[in-house]
Image 1 (cartoon, rainbow, N blue to C red):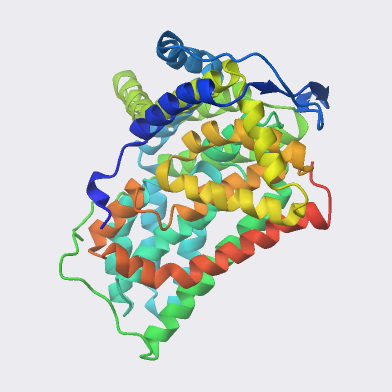
Image 2 (image 1 turned 180 degrees about the vertical axis):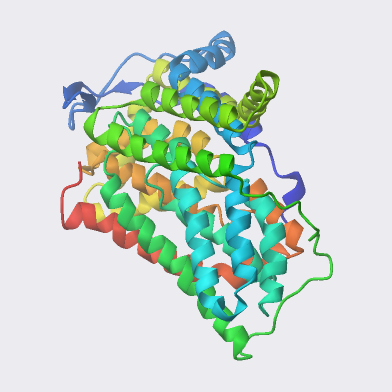
Length: 458
């Protein structure tokens, strides 16, 4: 059986891939496509592939590649670390936690409206996943929603699903998540958060799927169709409830204002990574000032936030090192040529589904959203060009494969951490969620098919 507790770290997997690609530069024929600039981005010209002299990479090239990976992804790495630090400055004020605790308190005092309470809470968590990539934070809130579910007569699955499925579906259908959509679009040379209108439709559909499924299960518990599941080894304990003070309300207002500014900046002002980074840094500073943090506390919070995302930054750097080795060895275009040839004659609507499933498979090994974007989008974006699929759709396929599969992969620290807190065995979780997951996959396939069969998405 797969040992979930000792699954390889993402950095180990990426390092192994880096060594593998160095070897492949000696085994795979070197080749290149011609490229041209179209609408401000470089695109592969179909039919121009040709072989070139072999450029096998040495051990010295292998050792140099991590630094070259850092240099190539410097802007994205800086973005991840600075925005991660800024968000931590905001979260340490307790504003987001206090706001959610307030909602949970209202829910506890109105048990007669159980369905509305579940739907509203899942919507709030979905907004968190959609806007700032809420993920690890659910580990805290599951300690609150588990006893809340019990008080409403429900079980551990409902208690876990409220924050985890809510945030997870929002994460998968995100329109403005800077750590997934933002990074993937940057690599694909697309305007930051462009195409958000369609992604908002996706987010609504995903959120509805999650809410309706949980409500269906809750109704089944009410009618006695399902046996409530409460494991004996649940680690639920009391959590300190934070007060929603006036200052924290101001911080929340600043946060929502920043999200609006992101939308306006991306749509009207041609904002890109530097401007978005500056906005979130400003938000972090304002939050610290309103929260009356000392300069030492604010800096410590920023350092902690950057530190938490350092593994993701290293994965991005090593992923770019893989790309550097493949590019210098002139095998990346050969791989593109082979992939395009493998699906030649296959309808675009099928090709894009294959891209989605491949991303989901890769997510098993690299559950880091930013890391997966860094290692797959440099290949998927030009592959989309060759297949006649828009890069926006390629980003969407990545987004679905990363976000949706996070709910079921045993290599995700968040997934296994939440199940451990609730005392839910992984096999029991899969047995409970598989129907919703299958529905979400089908919904994903529909949203991927529309841009290649009904309208053109640029």
